[in-house]
Image (cartoon, rainbow, N blue to C red; front, top):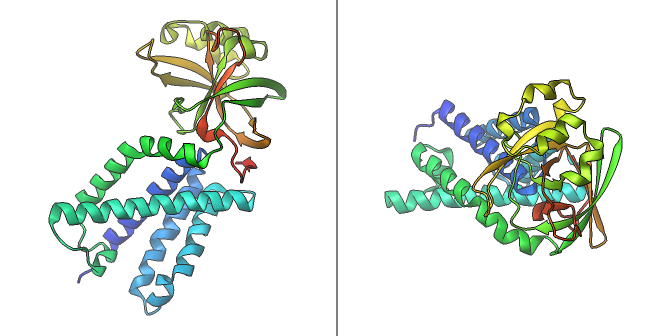
Length: 302
C-alpha cells in the first residue's frame, strides 16, 4: 500500500491539534497556542515511526503513553501531578472517541471492515474524518454535560475569591449546570457576576457600559482610556427571557473557587457582568459553571 508522507503528516497533525483543543475545552483550562502547535508537531513526527525499522518500539503502548504525557506538558504545563493525570484522562478520552467515531462511520458508510492498514490513513477518505469531527463537535456539549455530574462533586453553592489588578473580591456563587457561557476568543468558561458586587473595582466608564441595554450602540471608544481596557471581553449569551444579548466581561488575574472543603485556583477567567441581580434576596452574587468546581485533584490551574 502506498503511503503519502504529506497526507500522513497533515492528518496526524490535525488530529493531534483537535484532541488537545478538545481537552482544553473539556477540562476548562487555558491552552498555550505555541505549545499546542509544538505538541501537535511532535505527534505528527512520531507517526512516521511506524515506517521505520523501529516500528515495534513506536507501536508499544508505553511509548505512546510517554508521547501523550509530553504533548500534554507542552500544551498546558500543569504544575501538579494530579492535574497532569486529569488532563491525560481527558486527552485519552478524546482520542478514543475520535478514533471510534471515525472507524464507526468508515465501516457504516462504506460497508467495509476497517483493516490494520488504515493506521497509515491510506485507506481513509478525508471526508469521513471530517464528518466524524463534526459529529463529535456537535454532540460534545451534551456529552460533557452528562458526565460532568458524575465526575464533579455535586454542589449548590461555592465561595469565590477573585483577584483583579491587585484588588480582591469575595463572592457567594450559585452552581449553575446550565451556564455554558464561554469567552469567544479562548473558549474558556465564564462566571457571571452582578454589577453591584464588582462595580467598586471598575472605572465609571465600564460601570456605565455594563448598565447599557444596547451595548453595541454605546460609545465603545471611551473604554480605550480605561486602565482595564486590555482585560475587557464581550460575551454573547442566550436566555429564556431574552433571546440573545451581549455581556461585558472583565478578565481577572486569578479566581479561587472553594466548594465542599476543596479549593481550586484558575487563571485568566472572565467575569461577565450582569446589570441585574441574580437572586431576589441577593443570597448569591455570581453563577459559576459546573466544570470550574474543584475535583479531588484540585490545585492551581495554569
